[in-house]
Length: 117
Picture 1: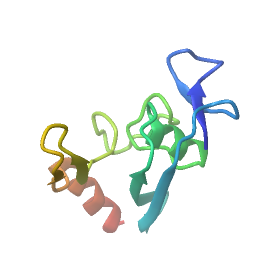
Picture 2: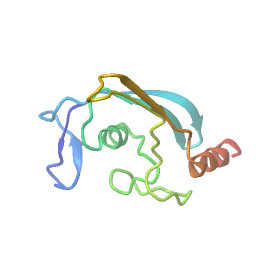
Picture 3: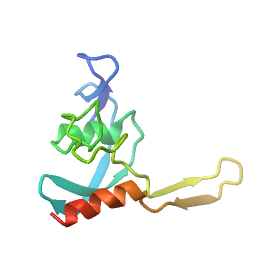
Picture 4: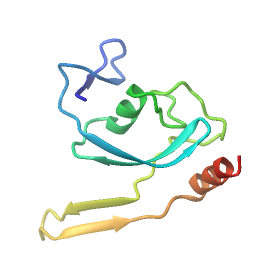
């Protein structure tokens, strides 16, 4: 879905017919009551792309006070987004670099709460 600056709020981005091409792929990893854990891969890098696309299809990011309904029963600070893996070409050596990071403790804690409901 194409993304452009919101016509209603200049500080926000929105899905818009006249926006720039934005491609987001996602896969459901786990479903919970009222929440879904997704794996998301982006082909483009538009501003707030994941947050805008997920909100647009009815899956706002927990803790996102800009693009969600403010629902944050877990009291997380910031958004429940985590970059598990980044792959890119080094600008000088042209070698492919792959960086990985495990989920932060607060993220694991929220998943544990959801799994035990």
